[in-house]
Length: 402
Ligand code: ADP
Ligand code: ASP
Ligand code: MG
Image 1 (cartoon, helix red, strand yellow):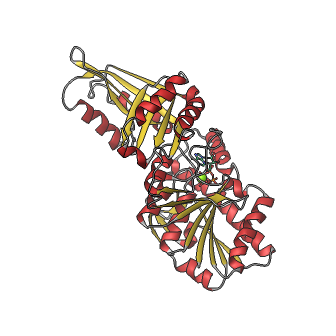
Image 2: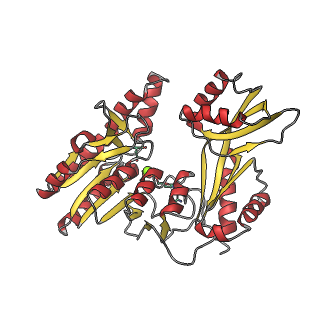
Image 3: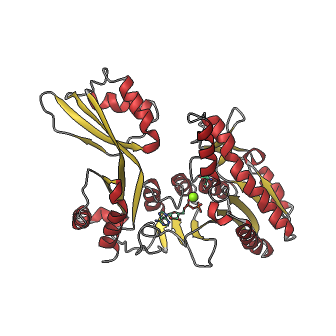
């Protein structure tokens, strides 16, 4: 059997944990399996590197940032190989260049295009545990790239897909996927299983337990994932195509404080206005999320929308530069907002989910600024200060009463 095992930053944060991971991998190896290990940078390494970069140059180029950030994963894999060798097990560490993990050119947010298997297969054939750097790729300029924060999960799924692995296990610091972030919602429950679609929504809406692109890729290549703890033996959560017949109304609740609201005030109330505004943002790679348009008055209207906090500055600059062409009279924004979402495939056939969510928010006196829905989710924009209270209220409103 070929097993891909991915361990996140907290699972390799110090020497003791590195040996803990080494032993867990060696168990599978000694049982006769081929083992490929994907690692993230140790503990808070990536955050610390970003901070260091910004202290030197707040406008550091993304190419150089990627050059810096990819060192974190290289530290983990080499130390892990040394740990396994210290335990008398043959192991080899490889980075994205050595494996040849080809990505798009976009620094900071690259996507895999093609991943070679030759080197890994060769090392596995000589009965080594193969340890690969997560989060990184190489682009057509022979530069290193990174896949976006949390991207090591995607490395693991990509390798599981191209190597046709029998198992892909994502080890982290919680025991699986919960009905909400267990660090925020004390009544959160561990899920036995969850569908790709539900997990993709949750991950995209702020549940960082899995990188959203890893779920997208797992669905595409039909890689079943198990999310579990590196510190306990508890059974984790299986992420797969279909789960039990009977669906809970709501599978999970997610919060995302990495959100900002922008409003463009007094734009022309005529066809094409929204098109030119959002087209201008899209051309500059700014992803827009919830959109709300006011009723027109005296030939003008206001449009509000949300963007990721990291994109706020650039979005404001673009709007300011194009103010006249976009007929904008005034631009306002608010960084102190958060998205709260409920997700569940059971929602499709059940009216009243939105009403119930709003009731929970009302009961805890949380004001709703904007609302958006899809077939399997409802998202509201609220004040950032309310997010923990609101997540607990909405979670308990749905999940504790079922
Ligand atoms: P790793 O370093 O192992 O990749 P992450 O910090 O990226 O770990 O992801 C694990 C964290 O995700 C947990 O510590 C938890 O706080 C958070 N999280 C958010 N939403 C959920 C959820 N629905 N279920 C489990 N964990 C969640
Ligand atoms: N080390 C990277 C990060 O912190 C990648 C990962 O953890 O998956 O974002
Ligand atoms: Mg992660």
